[in-house]
Structure formats: structure tokens, C-alpha cells
Length: 74
Image (cartoon, rainbow, N blue to C red):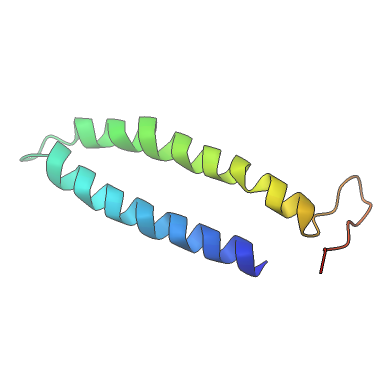
């Protein structure tokens, strides 16, 4: 779980920086439509793809498959 926690923490830190940069560049004044589009079309797919990219690590390190526990490799 430590690897998973660290990878998600790093992902969220990178996304926080990307969000701040996007907000400052895409939302001049009070028009937030481009920033909202960034959140919808960039942030959401990136989060989904990152979650899917973590599945192989989970399968290698002890995720239960079909109610049969898979022991972690040590």
C-alpha cells in the first residue's frame, strides 16, 4: 500500500501544480469556462488513466482477484 499511497500523493501534487497554472493562464478575469474545460477534459481523463495505470502494480503486490488472495512478492 505504501507504493500506491506514494504514487497517488505525487500524482495529486503534480495535478495541484497543473491546476494552479491552468487557472492562472486560462481564467483571465471572471471567465472560468476554459479553466472548467481543462478540469473536465484534462484532469478527469488523467485521473482515470493514472488509476488504470496502477492496476498492474496492485495485481503484482497483493490485490485479491476473484476472492482468491494473491500473496505479495517479497
